[in-house]
Image (cartoon, rainbow, N blue to C red; front, side, top):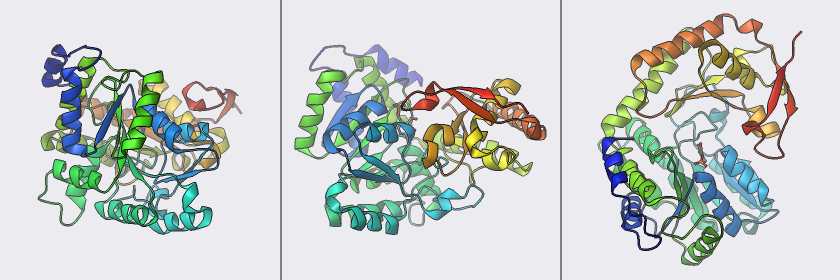
Length: 395
Ligand SMILES: Cc1ncc(COP(=O)(O)O)c(C=O)c1O
């Protein structure tokens, strides 16, 4: 966190109700996101649980460009179907496209026609699309998805974790946005929706926290009632006043363009340097992370033997680099790719750290044929990848 965030932490107001820190938090978020109700939660997944609990039921279908693991699991927990509708380009790792995070709008229309509007309680867009390679969604796509939702009177929510990176990609890549600030772009994007869920651990630049926003008064009341049951009073929702202050500053700092320029440049530096040596990655490099294409990296390991987990384990053994599989272990049969995400912590690494990561990946690339597949030894009934245990399958 920045010095400004740490300074704000020192001024945290820990009053149970009527805390000034909540006012700072709400004002800062409303300035960017623009929604009427801002409900703090301890993390993004708590916001998701509350939103889905009050809006979804068994048999419902919730489309998204690609659901993240926690949104998928929280939907499945209430008996709803989490449906991924990325554009075709988004499913091909090596293909270059400026907005691979886009949703397939024609597929969305077809789903609504097939299952009926009453079974679609909301539509989501994840910006940037974490499970799909950290790829951005264009404003044009946001507009189109919003138009479909308005026409069918379906609420439209953002999974807004990396809203600032997405806004910056729009500035860099979408015609007409070159001279707008990232904040103006984010504000415009959120105007197309009815609310959002957010993990403040991402573009909130904070160590903990999240929030849920909505324009719907009735829904907000139901959400706050549920919040009190598990998270806390609606002016802190499981967070300390100091956390609210850190987020209030962080969401603004995430939109600073010097910061965004450095962040996107260092991710791109890592991606470009390994791709030049032949390492298969999701192209172009994402905002917060570079994604290795584990199926292409380890073609001798079938998806059922978890090539992404095998590669993540090897990176850790070789160089102490912690990454995560986003593939068959995380999503089971719903996995469209087996990726290894190298997420880059904000404001932590210098170029020499990134150079070290490049060296380790190239070492692993050079002995890739010695890496073997894995078999599952233990799995939890949901979100199994957090605690699974696997064993190498030695030939
Ligand atoms: C796109 C997306 N949605 C939701 C979440 C869940 O947020 P949290 O970890 O704060 O529960 C994450 C976390 O990585 C995410 O990347």
